[in-house]
Image (tube, rainbow, N blue to C red):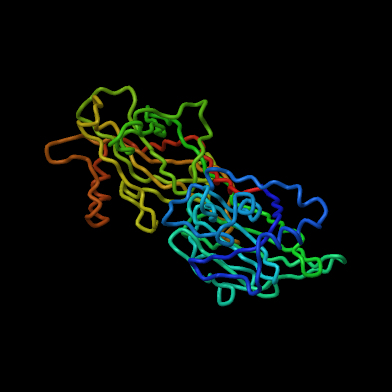
Length: 410
């Protein structure tokens, strides 16, 4: 979604970080010169409360000391009654002496931006690198003629335009590629009439969101997704997730990148306490067909796929679970991802489906039917071969990945 922002008075003075405009400025002088521009002096910036929820210790001051609420809002910043500061978003400002000021919060996207992955059209080296930063914000300040900025002469105005973008890490497997990182782009421009800043237009483009999962397979084995949430203090989410499940009407399920997806596979219609469900391979595809490509491995022989930076985590199911037949269940949690085009490495806005090959193992005093993932691969495979039933593939419903919409001020 594209968002257009108009700012009434444009300047930044970051005392704690040592960033100032090159020429003297006061809120009154800027407001006076700007008010002569038709239409723009009627705009009333609105600050979304959630954007302004920045801890005192992490705040970056915005504007000159002593400015009031109206002057703070006019430069797209937050005001708490005493202090003007930058919100948890991407804020762009133009100074009268011809500089861009870009302040980016890592909370601009979900998952959070990696601030050191940001670059401008001119790259990420000085003067296009951050002039200062803390754990939650990166601050850029550079001339409107630098860092790859494009200039356009529109007669009465000269427009200077640049773009900020973030890079993201891609995991490449033998049958597909995925990412769990947000991809964020911010196109911004300043229009100058003579020496006055006429307007600032900002366009925000963020990547799309995550996907859902649940379904049943043959041989009375079912794969479903946990939907339970912690509601009490001290609750363990990995346990609470399996207190309720997504039903058919809940699909597609939506998830944000890196958000946990809680998966359960269980045997249906059996009451034999001496059998155990065994997971062989679990993987994800972008279509309901388990044999389609691209694919991404989740479990291999019941153990986490080792070439994934965010390892799938098996969750033990034992007598403390409260289940009548704990050995009939397998649970694991993965971090939501989206497939990536193998050639362009662009995010693919597709559904994700989860599949597992399953079998049944006969429990004995000498064999717990559990994979021993620390052992060599041949030992794990040998354990899987003790299964007394033919392998059965069970699949989930669709999971859709969504992206947190970038919050901003207008």
